Image 1: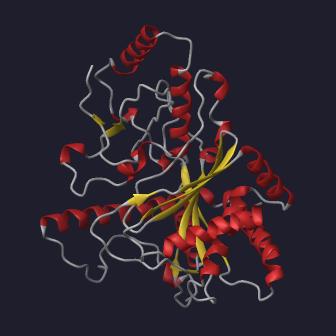
Image 2 (image 1 turned 45 degrees about the vertical axis):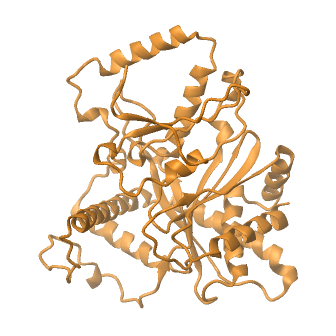
Image 3 (image 1 turned 180 degrees about the horizontal axis):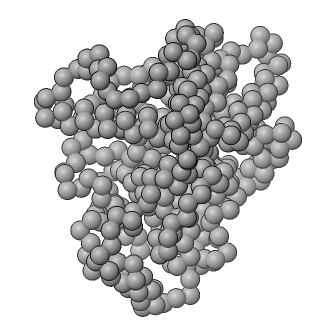
Length: 415
């Protein structure tokens, strides 16, 4: 059986992840949105394999992808024969796709549809005002110096720590009242400060994903109650951009900022207005995505015209300026994003596929030009830290220096 929506590619580049994260400059139209399975060259002398799993982000988030991978390995590593697996696949395909009358309900619902609110005029106004005021608190004056390059080239340098050292690191974090996730915010903060990047008067703003599954109130009907859906919001951590004058106080400062990151993360997750803010952010991101898509199409067709002043006839809006006190405009640039996946060994049930030993996991996402995302997680008993970024989007050498400072910080503060 052949499915035209799946492309089987043999990477020409030495790194499969690099081939995935750096798309061709001008992909053909019929490839847009397809799933891609990249196959490495066959190796007969070894029984070591690399499996690359990828999906478009609107289908689901990282947790969905890892849950899928766990179930896939559970099947491949089971006692079932190849014929039995093929029969399972055939039965599953017929039960879910044998009915050609399937409609759009088979697609994952939009994030905000899973956390509906009863909207009234008062609640609509209150939600918009709260969201606007929360956004005004996002002060960030630090960013990597960028450069323009027509081609994007994403790389993901990855660092892993042995199991015994990982246990030492986690134990030290626990002794200081934080998780490894909070510590990584502080690592990035001090790495940037030690580089001397940006004004010391303006803080560092970093963003991360927030798991919204606990807030969901809608369950999808069977048989479409899959874990494949998007369930992430966003929150920000803001930390000072200076170092203590006394070198002996640097370690204490590091742990203090890690605790600040923990406190800010906890407040974001427990905020009573989390759901309404998620709805407002979804509106904003949707409008932004449609605007960018329209601009991309117009640029490609040669019809793009720079935007003029916003029209006053753009539809009913909450008059926020009449309610929110006037405040001086401040920068809100983010230094980078952090994708903190936690303990992935809680998802991968290694004991259910004993014939397969998983020892390495590299995660990454396709990003826009000049984007950067630091990943942190534990897997196979080891701590993994990686930095995915477009090396053509930043001033030469600056990200290498930041990565070097981050590694030094892990060595110095975490052990």
